[in-house]
Image (cartoon, rainbow, N blue to C red; front, side, top):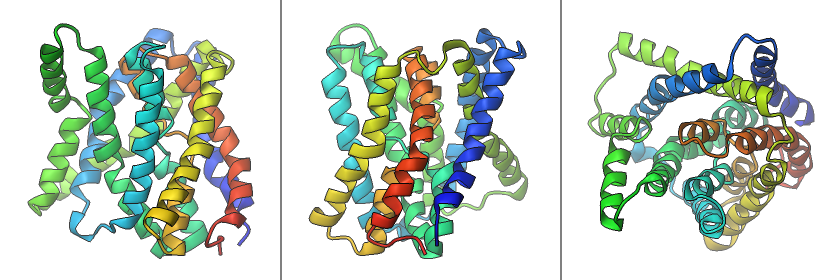
Length: 313
């Protein structure tokens, strides 16, 4: 199956949502202060619903170990390296945001349809093992680093504040609650599931629209160098490291290795922009990085697809 066309079919709606936000800002329909308020509202209402529902629906007993181990081994290595390298040269919160951008994939809006189109249900099941742990591992780790970076005072006091803030955080709290719900095998009442589903469905599109509105103010050239650096780490360094871990450390079979590499090569997820906006750090370059990585992903994926261990069908 030739996936060059379907790749565009998958990423064009992402471009469209970003463009809608940009146009709304340029037309004066949404002001800068509105972007900040809507971003905070999305972070506190829609994203928690999305995270809780994802965790509550996950059967952790059936997850395959090899695929997420390779993927998150590479992701956490990239995140930690960027934070360590940038920590002394930029504000710590900015270092953490850049680390998350270099390691957080758009697994839902782009990854799921792309894998389903090219490799079918077996590969999708492997991808979902990554999706299920994506927020639990990456966002939880990143949130704690953000809170440490933002905390003030003596080291022990700062760590205590960061731990308290992390547990009550609108990202970590729903992840913990959803994981506990799954572990207890509790059914979600139909009305609650429907309500959470509607809230969750709005999270990713709203992130992209708000990101586009932010670009209406700052443009793609603001913070261009760090944006391109984050895009290069995400689209090139991350998949290379994930491939090395999957192939030479874990010895994954070809289809599993394909899913790991492809997922690592996806563009930056829009949720990173919400973190940048929440912590008032590097919003212009993060917004540009999400857009540039999405623009560059189409040609990079077109080159990568035939080189994968299992090419698309």
